[in-house]
Length: 231
Length: 83
Image 1 (cartoon, helix red, strand yellow):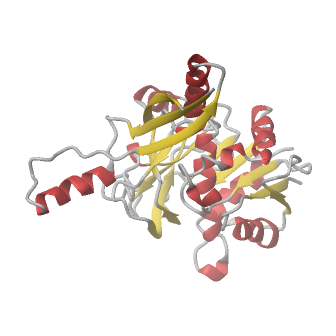
Image 2 (cartoon, one colour; image 1 turned 180 degrees about the horizontal axis):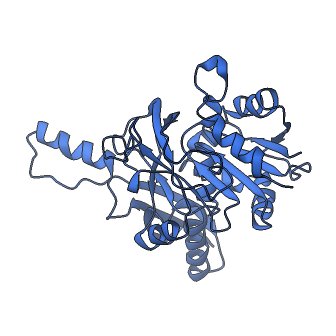
């Protein structure tokens, strides 16, 4: 059985939701990790949750990336260990250079909190393996800095290597400009690294994985992880 | 020796700067439509102890590259002053 570790930074606010989904909804072993820890406590799968770590000072994720625990997270990732960053966690992964690209202010300059639709780009990654690539998943976003950007060379290489995890789309699965909530380049909502063991995405699957919330589209991602991940 | 670095961090020219765009638009409301292309970045000031200006420059550059600017989306430049 996988052991998940959810990191809490000062300003994280989706850590408890993630622990609830992994532990209570999915019945997995979950450990809470503190940003000052230098020990991953034997966790196999590290999650960097959403929130506003260090008040988003300087740039979102820029300060958290130098937390003591991040040294261990980077080592874990470099050894091939699984790491997933949601929202602010994705921003931290970008700042740490664990996934390609950067997240800029939304093109509207507004904080956007609403349900959007995303579509998995392929089934060749751990978190999209059990997701129907024709289905538009309804997953909430809540961010001010979610405009994914990477230079042309990076975009070409991540597309050639199948590193795009999700793209924003309309409810029928069409990837259009209108369905792009924040101006992300090529509607990209999530990416993985070249080794495909580190995953970053802006939408919040943990907010759409409990039947009581009337939306379990986010559960496909967790089902993918649980069906394939091996220690 | 003590030095002071005055650092400017700007969004890369190729990227949309929504803040700058909103401010550019508001110039029209002030009847200052001659003003275009407003771009907004950050100004960072810091003090640094170093043996000489060369070392201070190298340290400031390291700080900019590692933390103060994200070169995927921002550029930086700075001036050093002896305190």
